[in-house]
Every structure is written in C-alpha cells, then in structure tokens.
Image (cartoon, rainbow, N blue to C red; front, side):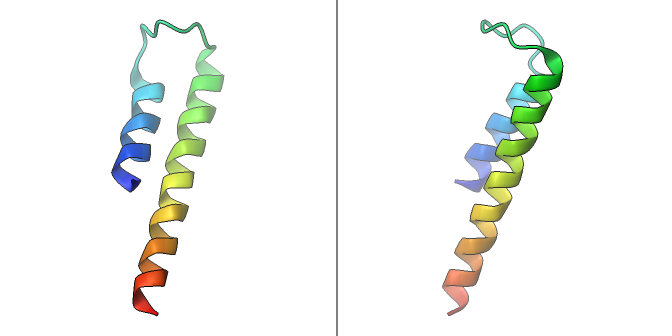
Length: 51
C-alpha cells in the first residue's frame, strides 16, 4: 500500500495535463498528504510486525 500512495502522490504532483482541473498548489498539497499518509501506514505496519 505504501507504494500505491507514493505513486499516486507523485502522479498528482508531477502530472501537468490532468483531466481534472485542480490548481497546482492544491495538487501539490494533496500529493504530499497522500505521501505522508502512506509513510504513516507503512511505519504502523512495520511496528505491528515487530510485536
């Protein structure tokens, strides 16, 4: 799942010709939120596996 959120976040940030009209600053914000969310989920899974 981490890779999915990472790819989705970078896609939102880097894709300049999106079919959905979203301002650049909001695309970057949403992409960063998705990447951070993926990192948080990844660390929770790693911590859960250690217990």
